[in-house]
Length: 338
Image 1 (tube, rainbow, N blue to C red):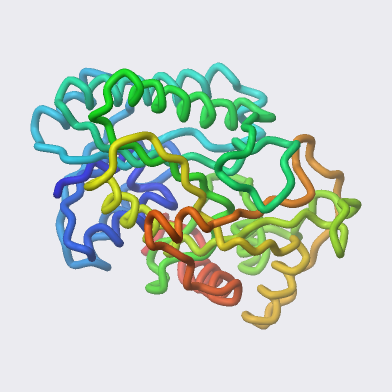
Image 2 (image 1 turned 90 degrees about the horizontal axis):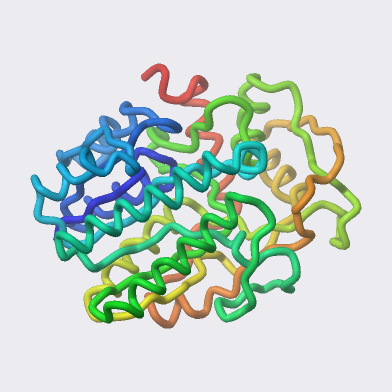
């Protein structure tokens, strides 16, 4: 089975490529490297010992994207490619709508043209909005609080409408919670450009000396220690969820939303404390103003993934902290140097 992985050089995409190759799938990676590095692809080959095709392409360049479909017989698509910084999306909404939605439309038009009707879409827990109470189940009302979240929600609706129009489509909408950690080889991991938007790379960059201290956004939430609670999931567990979703597409027709999370929430300070204990490194931090649009608690009900995909998480919070630090200390400058 040959799978096109858009955004396959990104954080979650790269880990998923490894799991796919190790399970015997053929992959083709499409990435514009706007928030990733071609070095990642070399490391995937080194880890797995397997070669694969890759294309440097932007999804909104439809003619260039079509070359991939002309040159390859594709069976399914895992669609990661998209801009993902919440704060940036508020400042640059047109850029996010153009890139994320237009890119998906171009991809879907080509999939339809070349009769590729199986897709796993990289959605997000942000689609649950501000007003639901954790644990989040897939049938809750959906909303968004920023342009990034709206792009995820709109794409989910677009994909549902595609299935309504043509019942031969098989689509799984995977709603991620908070991926952290890195491959246990230490060769690939989260490598944000500039100041990290996510908590764990911020912690690891403080640990490695790139940043002075961690900023903790708010300590007045209605939680045991006042800091926000999130469902942290090891990126390798998340990647394995995509392989299970591809398996599920083989016998499924429809457009199904499925959470990928552990079902357990940890506060920001619990994560910092666990990281410090596991790796024997103190992480200095300061409390700063809470961010607009952040909710107190966000964690998954993962039962649907257990039942439909036969998937559940295996890695602990300690594993996540250990693997995150292993990646960062082995690669203090990310992918800039081997």
